[in-house]
Amino acid sequence: MKIEFKKVPSTEKSFNFETNSVNLEGTFCRMSAKLIKIDAKLSGKIDTDCCLCGKNFDHKLDDDFKILICQGVYDSDTEHELDIIEVDGEFLDFDEILQSEIESIKSDYLACDDCKKEEKQIDFEF
Image (tube, rainbow, N blue to C red; front, side, top):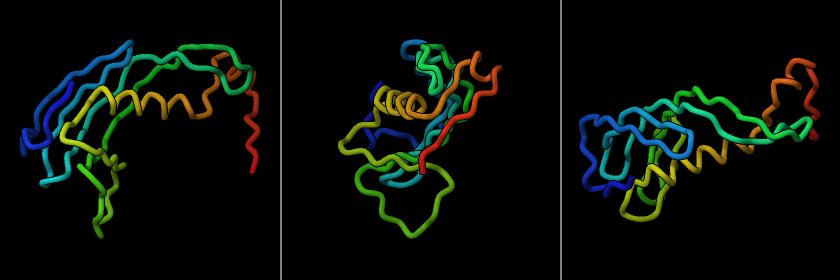
């Protein structure tokens, strides 16, 4: 789902977007000429690998998703508590944002239920 930046309303608009087995549902609105706020819930499951045993498993998602989308380079002295994604172009692309978030979650250290039960430790290199 793509929306032109200039067509994003300043009042909150609801959306529901699903790809594969992941659902992103919430609201979005314009905060300024170049900033859009997305406040949503990420739910479903993703197929990923256990960082301890390497076994493939389904990781359940049930996360709040709050970000700012900036058209172009974000340059502000104001600190935001939200993550900021800079996009190039004229469109707000929910599919691209969702895929990016899924890949970010997959890159984390995720352990399968078997390894969690055995309370295996994750070794971090510093």
